[in-house]
Length: 590
Image (cartoon, rainbow, N blue to C red; front, top):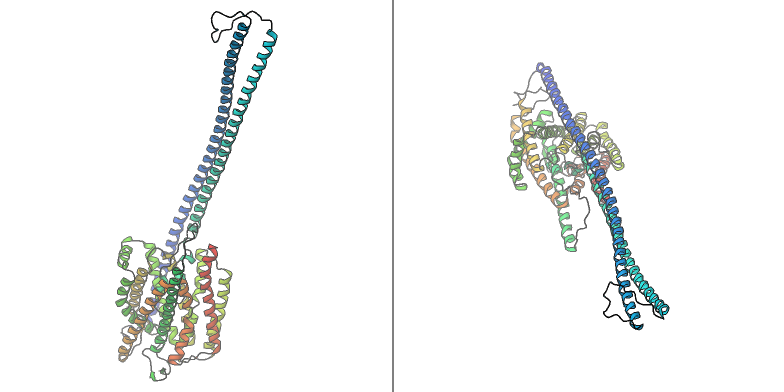
């Protein structure tokens, strides 16, 4: 296989030219995709703005109709009140006239009886006879007028009481109407505010549809050499509009604490497995001198550090992963094959471009980190690799408008200073294993940058596909990229150089690396389920320190104090960024 991939330098210009054409075509497709998404988002924003204007006009119409109805209701109430008063006065006049008539008839009868001129028949009601004037007419007239005055006063008092009661009742009703009016205005104002908030949220979503703080990727930072499918574990994102206090109980709190502790233990175990993975990869690659494992026996290594050999190690590892990952994915997420079938049948080119693009960047990141670990100490390589949070934050700021906070800027400065401190001893002195320091540091930096590209593309695809099917498709795509890279003719400097006698050791190393990858994936998956992705990511920041510690214990790989200080600064800075992501939702909720 090594002989088949060795070609003369004559083929290099053609290969470079074809690579440039492929890169140019990929850039054109990405540009077209960007323009298409931008056009669609602009159309949606325009449509929502039009709908917002229509809603505002409808609300103004509703308010105008409400005011008209209110004025009409007040006019009708005042008219009814006047009519009711007129009716009361008419009824009062009729009652007074009837009472006065009865009283006058009674008095005239009495006067006629007293004067001795009684009528032969009683006076019917409603008729007024003209009797002869009696001698005491003036006295009787005075009595009659006094009785009439008393009767009228009593009637007016009763009328005044009725008017007072009616007035109080009308006042109560008017107060109730005013209260209802205020409630209606408040409800209408709440409706307008809610519609405005929904429109603003919709516009904000269209302007920034991929929020870096709400994606699956950012919840984990301890991702280096296992293709990090655990970066894509689902994190519950529930943002209710109104916080409803849920009933809490002591048994629930006590039951949750052991669950979080179990998750933290699993996350720490995942970080340990990743560190062992890095150290095993370091042992697998040859150095200037054989490495002494646990101080007991020497192991000369299997392959020399190089780009082609890194591709071969990645392929051997992925063979084991692809043989066992489908079983593990089915165990963790039984609907994985339905989602993958739905992905193939959807024909969503935008999603496919994000999935394959993230897999390609992750493929480059893995090959480059293998190359870096083969040339410089594993702890230093992993520390330099942690430049990817800086690139991810800056890329999210440029692409999604997610401006980092003050803590984020301080963490970026701390990571930069830590990278300088960690990488400086490698340039000041030759690498302990005899590798190329310049190639190792450059490969680690390039690995972190390409991994940041993987993170950003995965953020764009977050929410459209479940993390486990996404990871399985990523594994398969990386396997294809690795196979094609070894199948395509490479130059002598980039082609694999493998001795025929080391194939058994290479196969065994690939099996060990593949098993460690799956163990790390499984442990991290359950750690996120128990403790949450945010806490698991904080534990993941211990990756560089634990890699350096296991490298010192297993193969006695020493680091200078300056490098250890830089590693600690990088770890603390990345941990600060992770803790800030944990505290940000709590600050928003408060």
